[in-house]
Amino acid sequence: MTDRATWLDYLSERDSRASARRAVAWDAYTELAAGALLVLTVLFLLIGLSPMSQDDGQSAGGSAMRQIVLLGLAGLASPLILLRFNRALAILARSWAMLLVFGALAATAAWSAYPDVTIRRFIVYVILLIIALAIASVLDSPRKYLGPVMIAFTVTLLIDYAVTVALPGRAFTPIGLAALHASKNTAGMVAQMMSIVFAAAVVAERRPFRFWGLVLLTFMALAFLALTLSKTSLGITALAVFGVIPVFVLARQNKVIALLVAVGLVAIVGLIVFMTGALQLTGPDWAELTTGDPTLTERDQIWRASVLHISAHPMLGYGFGAQWSMLPIYHPLWYYAGFWTGNEENLNILRQSHNGYLDIMIHGGVFLATFVAIFVINTFWEIGTAMGKRSRDRWDIAGSAMFAAFFVSVLFSNMLESTLFFPEGLLGQFLVLFVLAHHSWQITATEGARRRR
Image (cartoon, rainbow, N blue to C red; front, side, top):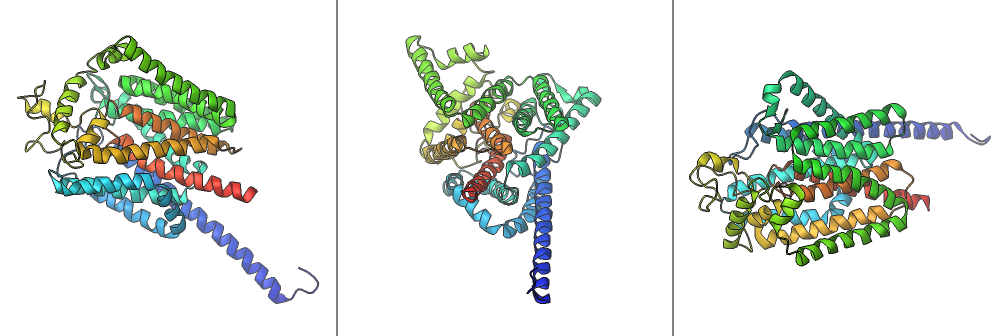
C-alpha cells in the first residue's frame, strides 16, 4: 500500500486476493471432479458391469444397466461442460471431422435395416461424446489428463493379475489369457492401450520413484499382453511403444529427423508396392510372410462373405449397428458359404467382420467411408501439426506422442478387429475420449505460445 492508500484500497486488495484464492480452489475442485469422472469412465469401459462374462454387449436389445450407467456418467459430465462452456465450444469446433462422422452415422438410420437398433447404437456414441467433451474441457493438458487414466489402468492391471493368480481356470481360455475381460482379444486391446499410455508417460516423468514405477507398469502391461497370446495386439503394441513413440519424440525435437521420418514412410510404402507388383504377392502371401497364417485364423472366409454382402448395397450400406446383433432373427452372413453356415453356434461367434474397414462399408457404404477417410486424414494433420510444435513441456510432448501411437495402433488393429466407429468397439470408444482430449491440449499449447510472445 502507498502512503495515500485508504482503507477502501486495502479492502479492495484483500477482496481481490480472496477472490483469486476462491477461483483457484474452485478450479481444483472442478479438476478433481473431472478426474474422478475420467477414472470411472475408463474403469467402466475396461471392466464393464459383468467382469469375466462372455457378454460383449452386442445383443440387439442392449443392456439396460449399461444404458443407465452411461446416462449417469453423462449426467455427471453435463455440469462440467456448463462450467467450461467456451472451452467445450472450442473443442467441438476443432473436432469438426469427428462430428461429420457422427452426422453420417445418424443419417444411416434413414435407410437402416433396423433403424431402432441404429438409433440406440448412435445414442451410445453421443453419450460417450458428451462425457469425453466434459473431461477434455476441464483436464486441458496431458499432465492433468493422463494421471487419472493411468490410475484406472493401474487398478485394472492389478486386478487382472490378481484374477489370473487366484482363478487361473477361469482367467485362461484355450486360446489365451482373458482375465477380467470378455475374451483374450479384448484383454489384448486393454493391455495394448495400457502399454502405450505408460510408455508415453515415461517420456515425461523425471521423479525417480514415479519414473521407475511407470517403467515397471509398462513391462507388467507388456507381460500381460504376451499372456493373452493376442499376436495382433502384441505386434501393434511393439510398433507403437518401440517405434512410434520414440520416433515422435525425436522428430518433435529435430526437424531433420522429422524429414527423415516422412521420407522413410514414403520409402516403406514404395517398397511394399514394388514387392507386391514385382513378386506378384497377394493378400494371403503378405499374411503368411508377416504372421505365418495366410488365412489369418479363417478371417479370409469372413472377409470374402463380407465383400459379397457389401456388394449388394455398396453406396449406403445397411445402417450403423444394424447387422451384427440380430440373431436369431437375422445375420449378415447367413446366406454365404463358410464355416458358419448351418450352425447357429458358429454364427453367434461372428459379431463383426474382423476388419473394421469392411464393417464401415457394411454400416454406411461409400457414404460413411468418405467421412471416416476425412476424419483419418484430419487426425494425421493434427498429429503432424503437434509434431511441428516446439515445447519444453515434457508432458505436452508425451501426450502428443501417446495420441500418435494410440491412433496408429487403432488403424492397424482395425484391419483385424472391428473397432473404428464400431458399436462397443473398445479402442474406438477410447479414440473418442483421446481425440477430444488431444484437441483440448493443442488449444492450451497454442494459448500458452501466444502468451509467451
